[in-house]
Image (cartoon, rainbow, N blue to C red; front, side, top):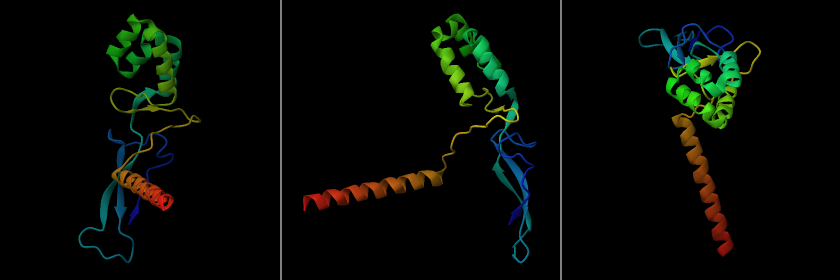
Amino acid sequence: FDCVEPPSPWPEKTVEGCLPNNTIFVNCSALDGVECIGNRTFQRQIPCRYTNGYSYSTALGLSVMLGNFGVDRFYLGYPIVGLIKLCTCGFFVIGNLIDITLIATQALGPADGSQLEVEEGLPVMSAWPVTCQTRVQITTLMNEEVERLQQQQQQQQQ
């Protein structure tokens, strides 16, 4: 099948039509010469970056400048944590340093589950997605390593 890809710069930046679950529907069709039972066109979900207007630069700037007062957490939609930071001077400054690191590495995003909008020229960081297939591959590698170690132990005992 052949799918119409979203416009560049997907998937690093926001794409119009991206859903809150970080996917977008694209139109696909069967290639010429492929026989289909039913429709030759269908929609498929592919990954994208869902953002909701929260700026990476703004969040990081607020965290650096006013993070001890919890302004960064209020901006990202975490009012309770923001209030605690306000009352404890940024968790006694240590919590603010942690928040600066979390926002700088894009590990902390808005409370609504969207991702921060990153300006042009700045790197977009994202976690390595763990899928069922990934878990199977890791488990297989671990099992192979255990078997190899058991064989080594048996050879040493002989």
